[in-house]
Length: 118
Image (cartoon, rainbow, N blue to C red; front, side, top):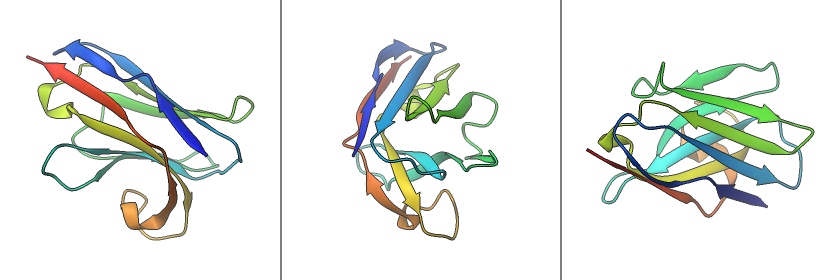
């Protein structure tokens, strides 16, 4: 089970930290987002090395991290822009392929809404 939290409404340039708690450990997890009328897109992923991967649109602004002891995945989002507005989902159980491709993940949370106003 994956449960996201931390979403909200902020102004452009603001920061938010999303959290995703999980019940079973998994070394490969990711954050995705989906804006109305758009496809779900990968934002950031992390594995057990840990190696991180980011979408070009968030590089330098977002940071993914994981606290295995707390069974929590995080996404620190800085310098938010209106185009970051979306429902954000965490995903787990990566089966292979592109780590930012939603088809590679088996389990999903219910999402948390992020709204950035200009």
